Image (cartoon, rainbow, N blue to C red; front, side, top):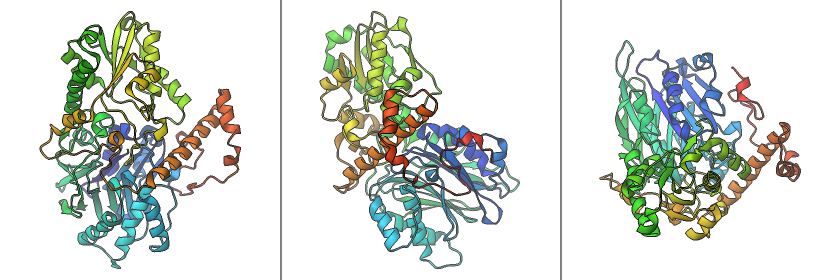
Length: 552
């Protein structure tokens, strides 16, 4: 899952980077691995700055923003899925031919090997990274080049976009910028990944409207972009300098099935995605989960529960609804350190375990001698859940029940959320009772899938289907039978590399455990190889370099 932004201002002397830089931290929850901005200034010149780290780490000074002039631009926050965490894979991507194109992508393609083969053998375009976003960009660029024109128009761009819909399979929402021409946004024909367009009166001397694309409505709200329009599945929007947006249904809608995990976990509660309030969907998840808790545990056991405690912060809305429905006191007994990153993205299991302790603090007086019902948005690997249960028991809770707003996760997520290798999922090949034993809870209660779907679909008059393959194993797009093995291989290799990188860092800092040392010594052969995908672009920071040391 990534965060994307595209901005075009009516004032030709305006600075798009201001809105992009203000919008990216609002979407920081969507990607903490890398950040990047590309703008287009006078004469169609492209300016780029990107690197690994948070937005605040990549952009540390006012001067760095001034070095990105121009009235239009793109922003991207990376959450790694396919590919690696090398700086070379920070977006937006750029190709100079044809016409100079910048590109930012949220999602994941499931036919990357076929696309790579096509681009190599037929289109003869060089792919420099393992990122499927670069594949999308080059498919578009290759098709656009077929026009053979000195200058292209909107019709040419819509035609070129049809090449993406023809060849690319998976979930994607994208924004692109054509040097000196304008920006555009488009969405996969299933509507898996979100994309929203807003407008705002320009403050420039010539008047007119500014426009912004965003992954979530909250960024538009906070930057005062109104009249939000959800980009439909298979739809594309082109906005040229000084003109109104042109909407086109480039590909028929094959389904309207947003990824339900957006509502469960990823999106901010103050966002509205595909017309559905994330906040209200989570309220409904709490109401439905309360009924399931009552059925699973029975009224007599529920009466013994002294307090409902949310796991901060995504589950707080649902936990409050659940507590009110069951008439049980609600208490935020875990206090979160807001400056520790999300644990399930962290590279090694030991790091995730340590991070849980740094991330949450249990107020012992709220646990001592009580039967507690902990509520979380989901249970992925179980690492976080097990540590949280341990913390509750260390705080002297009598009984610990654990409720999940999501159903058991037993399958790979293939459209842009790198949850885990399937075998690492705690619910994989385990019953609810076995999951409870594994995380040390007295009982685990999961939301049912029909209830989860109803919680979201009841808030929309248009959407009845959702992408729920991570729970059901049935995916909204056709999936090649060999894809899952390729995915497991990629994720396994990336996981091993991240563990090794973390171990090397620990050794260098002289805080390594025996396991860290083992990870380093057992993978010496990897260090003998030249690091692939090393970016030597003048626009990026070199790998192994702290972005904080760079001010250029």
